[in-house]
Image (cartoon, rainbow, N blue to C red; front, side, top):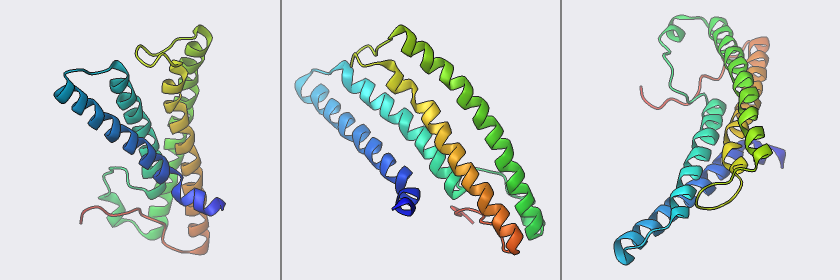
Length: 168
């Protein structure tokens, strides 16, 4: 069960938020064009669904090593050098993610303390602002998994996972 969650967590979350975004946007366009009426809540739902899409998508990209990167140097390194460079990159990114996670809690905490709400939906802004710490938490989990996978591959003498290739 945990393996299924590990492989599909981001995929299912992205599907939910993407469906929410597209469905709400389609409804709002129809309401605006056909009925000459639009709501404020629709724009907010689309905005916050997009924010969650970005952060969850970033975690999925870390899992698949699908982030945009300049990989010219990797073509000239032996397998152990590639592994070392990937491990170094994961450690740097983990440090950045830890800092960003720490700082993102301040914003959520201030919103929680003062009880701020969104303009249209009138729900707590904590739900919208929580996308950043949730995203960075997922990124950290995926970075830890990537780091452990690379160390395991390095110890066993296997080539490290280089990610999914989009273009050759």
